[in-house]
Length: 438
Image (cartoon, rainbow, N blue to C red; front, side, top):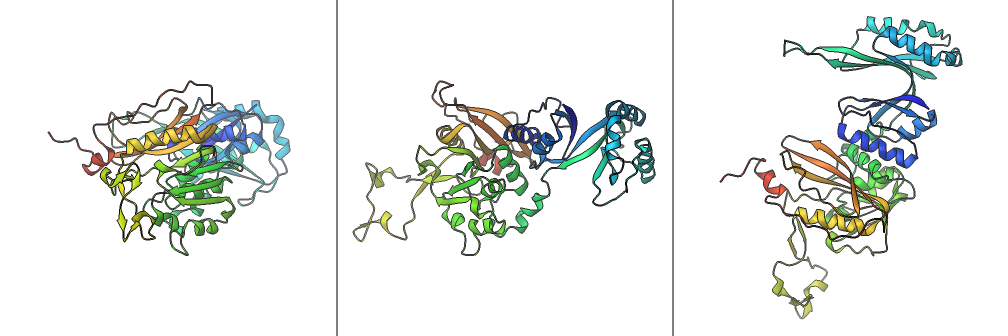
């Protein structure tokens, strides 16, 4: 076992640990992340080999880089001493190789002169290979972490050096692909197209991979389908709005897949009401990754009629020129209101029925930033909630809820408790999340 330093991106802090744990499961890498803190982008883990470090982070979206730790200390002198104790026997292997030095500081900075002095302090390594700022075979990095210190002057921030690491750069995550899938560059998007970075993160957390079947029942313009397909999964999507599924002849979900050269991973898309999903019960899915409609822009609806009298024993009775109206080519099926909490309850039931054992449901849920923000999280006796990551906005947030389907037979089947709320998210949204007046 050897220590490796993981440098996370300084964004989406609550998602980092869950994404890396998912990748550890996918790559079958044993890793202890108990020391992870959302306050710091640095994490030291013990791994079996350099190959394990590469496999763990090579498709991570929220990981910038990983380094093989050669030493650490609270001061430069302690760092040098620790390096001699840990890795002195390995230095000769890199003596004639091309190399470069780099310095990364978190919550602190160094002047160019200070950086140069730090680099020169490692002359005891006796590296004699050529220094190359580009295409060097090895990059040796000093990583510094500063912490805030109390100050009487609240208008000024003061930070002190807490720890330093010296390491050999091993690999980078896949943050470079965020720009590739940027919605601004995508041929076909809509008002509900999901942020590319978090769509990719959701796909990692959902364990999308070659040989996996991933379904999005609220596909829209296919953001999660594209993210899962990037990682090699076979994807299928549906939506109640046929306009988004069909798009236009030269701008639709299919053309997005062609744009990224991942068409082979798109199994199909179809139009359906999620509450009447045509997927047969025997079809088992490896993951369900979705962003259910919140019903903010317009009230959430499903197929059905508010007027029960228009139907008798489930049979349509509306006739036009002697023919049933639902058989006409221009027929538009009626819709009735559908509450978001009911949708989430139906979603967990659907997931329990259609996920393979240990399959994952990753769904996004909006919440108000108040004391009761977590009371509306749906539950199911055969699904275990393993992740509750939050993306905060001004007065509201959205959460990525991640469930794992327990192996069938391990838990007794129990009835699902339907949840009730005094207020709906949509009502709070349009009130500006202010308390209702009495």
